[in-house]
Each structure stands twice: as C-alpha cells, then as structure tokens.
Image 1 (cartoon, one colour):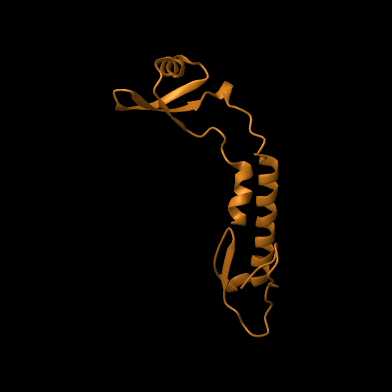
Image 2: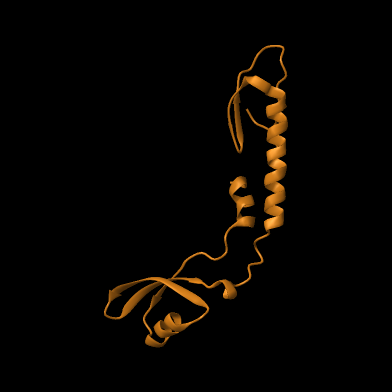
Length: 123
C-alpha cells in the first residue's frame, strides 16, 4: 500500500478521459476544441457516443497532488538504502529488485537489521 502511495506523486496527469456524450453541442465542442485531442469514439446507440480524449499539451489542467521532486527524492533515497544493504551482503545476494532482497544467510556473517517500522527491512 505504501509503495503505491509514493508513486502517486509522479503519476502522469494527462490520462485518457472517457465521456459518454448525449448532447450534440458537447460532441462538436470536443471534436473542434484545441484543448483536447479525441483519440477514439464508439457509437453506443442512436443517442450516445463514448468519446475517449486527452488534453493537448498546452491545456493540461494543473494537478496539486503531484510532486515530481518528492517522488524522485523518495525513489533515490530508497535506492541508496537498497544499495547499502547489497554492499554489505556482497556475493551472498541471490536476487533483488526495487523493494526486496533474497540472500544466503551464513552464521557469523553480517546480516541487515530488520524491524517492524516504516523504513526498516522486514524478514
């Protein structure tokens, strides 16, 4: 859950919008607008059209919920933490990805500290 939260800070804001259009004026407004690019249309029935569109580059609405700097810092900090643990485990590492490490545990050799709190590794 927490990993997906941090990703929201860097989420692309110009996602495809889908609108069910039943009004002729709205239909032509979308088609003729410089603010949107219609990507696809599907005629649902005689009275409704499903219109898929994205905002054009000059008209992307601002989003106060994104912060690319915070997302980049968090990702970089997590990667540095991962690398420091990998460095300590050396050749005992069997596999790792962005948020996990599988390694050989040997008696008498260094083990990473683990805990149950935010920012700590778990076993």
